[in-house]
Length: 306
Ligand code: NAD
Image (cartoon, rainbow, N blue to C red; front, side, top):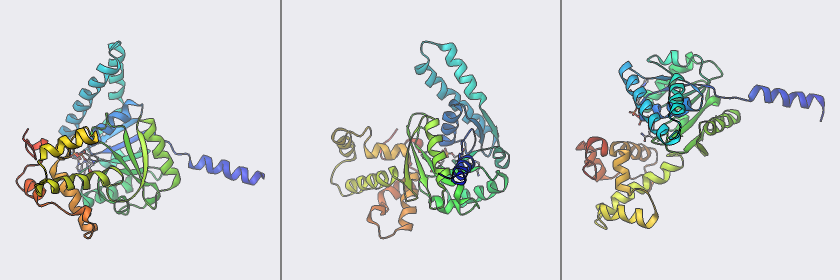
């Protein structure tokens, strides 16, 4: 190989090897707090951002509690080491209510705010102005097109989906979503980062629902239709899928756990994108339950009462 070819490869290697040491996480709800916990626990510096101080305090208290659960199992024989782990993890997390400040030194921004395209675009438009050029942007959206969110910025090459699962400290999977503009280096960096925080990444294109929800949401909706047609009771359908398919939860238990409002929001969005797709057909029963405020476990009632 010629010297110039070697120089080119060396330069390319030097220029493109991206690593994540510091993160800004925007949104400190269920997902943002979980992502902050696993990143901080694996030695990453995290700035966690939300709209108000009390929300951030609640998130920090939740992380502390969750870490105590981890320590009880992981450091059962060495409580002192467990306490050290909690202290060092919490010390890796700073908080702020100003997104512009959160991103100034971040290698990676993970957005986990409300599932609303216009609100996410607005946020990223602002972050794009304040984050350094090197900063990678990722959205944890469950159902919105990554490309549409990325279009609010001027860094499509440094934009991807990083889809975690709830509860983040427990669930191993991360979907690394490559939009058409995502560069190879950014994709590789996000795969590496996912492994560095102890997750198992899988890759997919920017397609509705990515991999897991693309299969899971139509499955849950078809379960509702099966029940609506009177083909089986919801209790029997749940038992059938647990004992017959080996699923840990039946579809109605899962719907209540995820939140019926969230499921409705997802299916309505996909139906709008692809009205002819029978897999994305909305459900009348689901609409009625959501209209009645029965959103599942979090409201005390969904398909079941809690
Ligand atoms: P959540 O309601 O628990 O938390 C959202 C947080 O974002 C709230 O604390 C809210 O105050 C904050 N927020 C809203 N707008 C903000 C802004 N402009 N700047 C800063 N903070 C803001 O929601 P969640 O369940 O954590 O979901 C967050 C995202 O993750 C959504 O896009 C959702 O689709 C996705 N997601 C959720 C799950 C799940 O099971 N809950 C799983 C995977 C992905």
